[in-house]
Image (cartoon, rainbow, N blue to C red; front, side, top):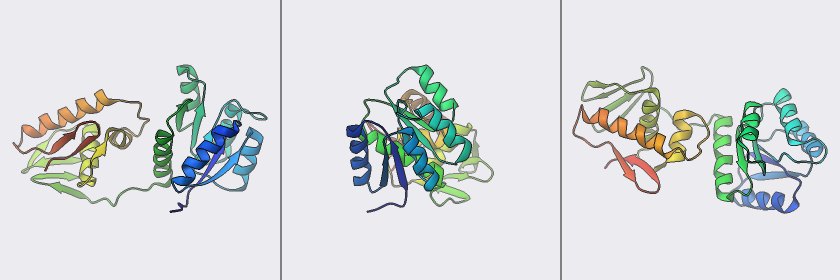
Length: 228
């Protein structure tokens, strides 16, 4: 099914450009292809895109120049897709305004997933929220930022609260670690399994002090869900 989002691929390697276009088209996105920085800027000036997939080593304007130009004039998320894999390059581009950075070679399914993350962030799409989210004897209040179990308050950190909130917003879903991290930290997920595991463990420990109920279930190899 065709999605409303338009994606601009700025990549001078024809094979890579076509591969990305084909994969995103199959996922339902409308794609425009540019093969130089100058051509990419011309497309951006004509219509909005969300996001722009940007190579760095381009003819005409290079990727760094194009990123700077985009961020000066337009509210457009930019994902850098480059063979430059040094930490310095990644940090510099992210500090210059890039929303994400993937190194070549990349997994095409991961790229599609990251495109989806940027589209959701940029469009502000969120699941319909309620002031109070409930599960078993647990109550989470989004307005007061409090969690209670059988009327007794749990002392959760901001990230612990957001993790629990995300799980409660998806009561029938197994939530991946990347989805949880994206929601709770509003940051790039780079395999932060230990961080998420520690926070989940802390939530369980704090809730266990208030009730013998199990609230979070681990689904090995995938992520977490609400315990049945």
